Length: 115
Image 1 (cartoon, rainbow, N blue to C red):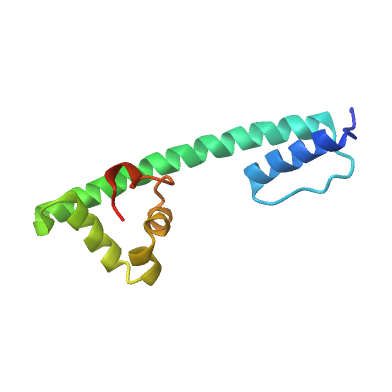
Image 2 (cartoon, rainbow, N blue to C red; image 1 turned 90 degrees about the vertical axis):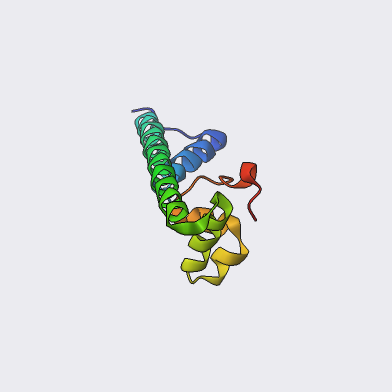
């Protein structure tokens, strides 16, 4: 097992590991196998998160469509009603927080210019 000692490689390993697991690893006795495993874990995590975001978009858009059918009239009104229903002051003030709370991708509402 080849041990990694280069500080740049250890820094990259730490970043990749954190993206996969949410916390930084111990940097003692890091091997190439550890590095390769961290890369694979990070790729799996990214794919899972992408699928979760896609599912959240579908669910959110279905909910908005239902609210529009129930009388919201338009997309922006339906989104506003959802934000008000959150009963969370941050959801009303910060559209990016609302995106996060719904599991939507960052910047989801930017093309729609919803504030």
